[in-house]
Image 1 (spheres, rainbow, N blue to C red):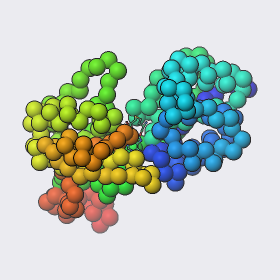
Image 2 (cartoon, protein in one colour):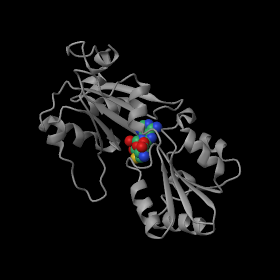
Image 3 (spheres, rainbow, N blue to C red):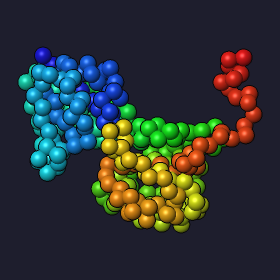
Length: 254
Ligand code: SAH
């Protein structure tokens, strides 16, 4: 049997946000390696699999990446159906790309299955449209955390005119605020901070760029959380901009 690993996104937490394809892969799995942020409720879909927790919550204080690679390879070479289950989408700040490349270089077939990434789910759960005609023409997903300590081009982000969705930002609120203000983003730009998106204990804190750090402190914002920064994150509902009604969609329908 040829070796194969499925790199599957488990979505942000709510088991109803799993894709049908993820459910099929889980159902066929012999071995499932799960990450920290995966809601264990999704494991109801893999009744016969051996479950291996490879995140901090599994008790193994952050399993080294090299060890995870070797585990996947070993089980795949034994002909087992291996699912590597990751929170959100496997390729959005999830190392899915790295793992797929490593496995393919060793002759293992890899199939990637999308999951709903936390940034999209968090915004939707809070009724925030990440793009909105006449208000936000795009969305940029960034992580505030880098392994090599390098910095983002905050000025470009501040001036890019897109909604910003920041992952892994809870410990970096001060830097994010300062850099975006320095970059020229208005102090009253709305910010939504969404903790445990899509889970029963989801919490949301609305603020603005200048107050976000202090508000997060009072709110006791904890990881995992995403930040949505931009006009669309206003607490009051927005009407879309003043573009003429004859947009593509209306024309296409007409
Ligand atoms: N691959 C994941 C992201 C992994 S990076 C995805 O696509 O969602 C880990 C970061 O994701 C966390 O620090 C947090 O910023 C965000 N995150 C993951 N799950 C979350 C959730 N349920 N609610 C809010 N943020 C979450």
